[in-house]
Length: 258
Image (cartoon, rainbow, N blue to C red; front, side, top):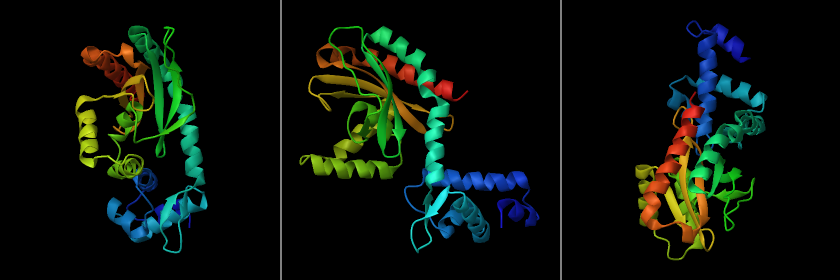
């Protein structure tokens, strides 16, 4: 049975309501931390199991969802992944953010970067290099974990707890002296201040100030940073430098909300 037929058989649901239900299911999966079954989806969206089952069957037939195993749980399918990749291209963050990053670079005279969230990692999408002889340069397209570095931390601080748990597990393996309480406190500082810093964290002699940007619904999409050699990042002026980075990130969020 198609979604259209299911909607037609419902005495209360018109075409618009049926479409809303399908959209709600897809959005629920986009926020999910793992596979979901019919009962969990029905409870979350306050829908009947029969309606949810029909929606899942239709989405699965089009590759937007796929079953995990015999348990009947679902995850996003290959078609949804393809749509996500196409969405990044169509949104064209590089074009939208370029003037903002260029102005920030001109003001700070340090390299500015644009990073986007890609599943459970971060990818550099663009940069505007510092005009100074000694500068930082990033590899466009390179992916980095979310647990370390200012650009990553600015993102993960605003993600669901499952991402943070994953980061903590990775940090425990790589750092014998890792303190979970300190990490949670650091993320809380990011949420409070709207930015984060890193000094000698992902590279010796490197410094960075990063702030997140969001979509219209308040979901974090990525971060921007101002980065350079640590000797030019005077701790006494961090607040002023960070204020410019935060303002630039907010401007990108405002552009995305239009």
